Length: 360
Ligand SMILES: *Cc1c(COP(=O)(O)O)cnc(C)c1O
Image 1: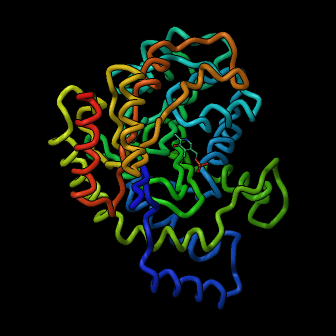
Image 2: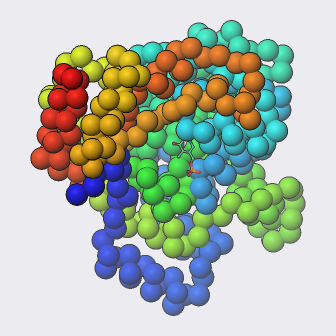
Image 3: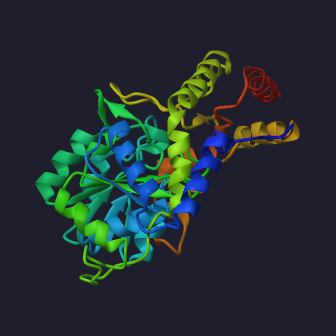
């Protein structure tokens, strides 16, 4: 049996079918229908945030966020993230400036970011990598001092709390991805989490061609709407998301206890909850990493080199930048399989193969 790095969370079939019937019977398939409105409300309460605006994917959430905050010039972000963080900014005509990460937390280091600020910088875009909260207090202070916007790419950080409060309440906007491979998903989908109500009402127009409540185009917009079937998937999955996270947490405990001692893990931020979205491990060398990957592949197990490559190496995003820590980590990291239906015996098999490969 093949084991992939992840497996999409499945809804209760009967519940999903009932939603599909209801949607089809109503004849209202998209354009902020009943399911989208219900999911926005339920996510606001589940996450503990003020405004959730659902969109068709996480990349569009980023693009809309840049426009809503009227960013120009340079945006400082992490080279150790999924390509969309940087490519969405580049796509929107912004210059992407990479600042290096901290080798332990794998997040942007605020200290390094400060050195990258120029007169052209309009925003900082930290990423809560693998769901691990960034130094939000430091970024808030820095952004305040330098009059910059802060957008958090929180695509990995669904349900994560810092000192009991949603991590998504920090910054001007946080974005989420609800792609099928993410912890919680709507097949394809995403969201903007916005504290300021006036920014939120602007975003609601922007994602629907710029239409106001009367259906008159009032500003420049795009089509970024989530449809009813996507939202129905979300409504089904939200019912069982806590038990899915608990099941992942049990497998994380097993990995933690049984993996060979020398393997490094991400240092988690103090006071932050864990959503168990990923299980990254860092090896001593790229050679060792590939050795482990090959051994697992031979056993029909497919971890992912995530993130690889470091984005500062991509010349269509940027040229002449160098983030040595990110480059080094990206060559030595693997995300091990982790999903709600992964079993203890599968985790034990994975660990056995890794231990064996490291002895060779
Ligand atoms: C998945 C992901 C995105 C993009 O989201 P999509 O919904 O796939 O467009 C952006 N940033 C990060 C860090 C991601 O992991």
